[in-house]
Amino acid sequence: MKNIKIVFVIGLLSFVGVSCRQDKLGPLVNDGTAPKPITNPQVENLAGAAKITYTLPDDANLLYVKAEYMIKGVKNEAKSSLYKNNILVEGFGDTDERDVTLYAVSRSEVASTPVTVKIKPLPPPIAAVRNSFVVIETFGGINVKYDNTTAANIVIGVLIKDSLNEWQHVDFNYTSQLSGNFSIRGFASVARDWGVYVKDRWNNLSDTLRITLTPIYEEKIDKSKFADVRSSNFPVPQNPPLPISGGSIKNAVDYSGSYPLINLWDDNITKMFHTKQNVDQPVWVPMDLDKTGVRKFKFSRFKIWQRTSQYTFNHGNPHKWEIWGTNTPTVASSWIKLGEWTMEKPSGLPVGVNSNEDLQVATDGQEYEFPIGIPAVRYIAWKNIDCWGALDGATGFLHLMELTLWRQKQ
Image (cartoon, rainbow, N blue to C red):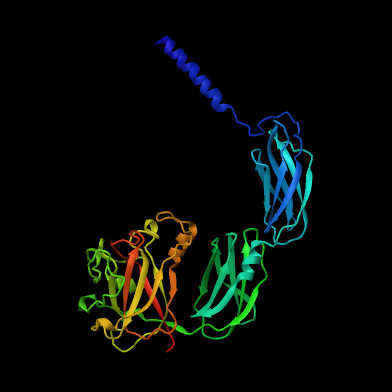
């Protein structure tokens, strides 16, 4: 027993000694010797950047190579490991010639003598994005189309002139996609001045495209007059695509009665419509948009909110669908296809893997425009071709949180 106590005391004293000792962070080695400098630097000028290739010194003391350069009067720094023979300097918003100073750095954090090279970056990515802009009027606002061939992380800012003739921001669109478009909505059909520009993550700004456009008139359709007409037993048009299973397109039944169709137009994106699962696809969901029987609608666009969280771009969220319309739902041949759409995932990542941009798009809701020239109708049907959880499947299901429609001036 005495030996055990002695061992315990010695172990305790050792622990106390270790726990009381303070670790000091610093260089791996403290010999103070500077490494040899890099040699034979070669410059490849890139869009808003430059790649500098060099010969590393034959020096066992080398840890990394450092580049120092100025952007807008502020010193920037880039580092590259001893396992690479090049370094990337980036963030330049112009094509001015400038110096970049390179240092080999030792394991003691001692820098070599400097080697200075001159670079002349090509026009930055924001310039190419800005030059690609196609801006047109659309329903309730404008649409901005762009190309971003370098997949740069950018933000596209949109401005309007206010009543005091001052420019004010109305939207910021963050993206790293190779191409895309977005719309700014909610404006009256009157001519106004618009401005569109690009900014990158180093706060470089493009010049501003200034344009005068008149949004196309539209108005939001009153959802209080919508009605579920699935129980009316209207004949369902058996137009392609038809179910792969060989069954018929049929009205979707609510899942356990817990998620009724009326949830689709209650202006509450926390309550959903959900069909039964593993039913024949496509599935047919008819709706009456004016139960008072007074109005018909020539649609301009619609917006949907998918089920999010772990279900984003997955499960029963729609992937491909069509919208059909009629004024005589009792006649199967009267239904006309108003449009067809496929939900695009911004990142292009596989099902179950989402980027921050994917999540944000789903949270904000997704807008789609109807083709120009479609007829005015009172009844519509959502024909769900497939869902994200069963792409091109014979069976599947559908869930959505909300549907909002706008109509054109007739």
